[in-house]
View 1 (cartoon, rainbow, N blue to C red):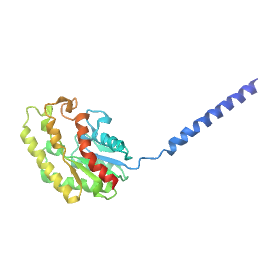
View 2 (view 1 turned 180 degrees about the vertical axis):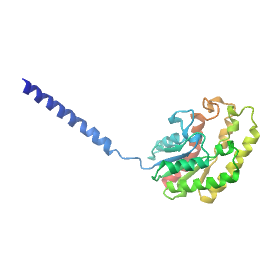
View 3 (view 1 turned 45 degrees about the vertical axis):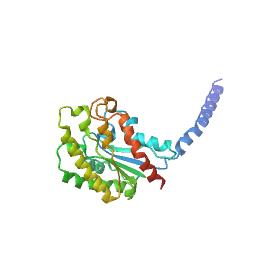
View 4 (view 1 turned 90 degrees about the horizontal axis):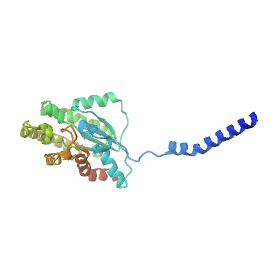
Length: 233
């Protein structure tokens, strides 16, 4: 009786392992996405105060896939509060040696917020453009830069000099646009979208400073045609 029970148990175990094997093999053999994506930035890229699915670059990747292009969700190097220099340092310490089909960059609001000079921003931003291009397999045409949102339009800015904030944001964005032109990198101007959000609480996250998935979806929609053209070349 004992021998029979052992035989049956062994048979059932072997059958279960055999039944599971095809599924395990399928998972191991699942092909990675055709195109890869790296998203660099600060709180606007990491999606402070919103879910991962609401991040603008995650929404963008989903839109691209819905259009029939096999783009994976982005790897993200970003953190709330980072300036250009802090992002560059974080990239170095990350040890990321991979290259990508697409690289996005959105950085600079913390340079402005901390009162750093526009000259410093220009120098450090240019360095980041070179870093982004390296990640994009040396192809500047596979890098996209988004302009800095105007946080002066947010509820958080109530009581502050919104005109001054807007002027400083414009200056930094002018620099970013100029440097992108020199590097032959696409520049996407989302700043007007962020200004049009003023007075609409649904466009902002619960902290009143950062943006909701609803607003960031607009950034993704504006970037989508450029990214589709990049990946279909």
